[in-house]
Length: 117
Image (cartoon, rainbow, N blue to C red; front, side, top):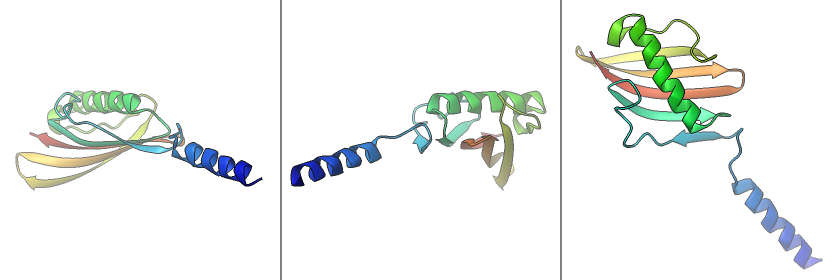
């Protein structure tokens, strides 16, 4: 009986440690900071979606921004089925930092970037 309980407890720990598609994840952008679109993509996190899909959305969002006003443009339409909001802060006149949150149902992709203008 004790052996069964310890096996069950061990199995439960293994199951809790395995990430699922519904869990939130922080995606590595190291080495890709300048290839995702903006001058520097500084972070990317996803919920209920893969990191690959998150990176794809970052690129699509950047293309939408550029199409509506150059590097400092704003994307005002859905991107790949996601509704996105962006908050910007400026430190110096030649660049800005932004945080973009994109949602589609329970799926969420959040990325931050620095854009030189």
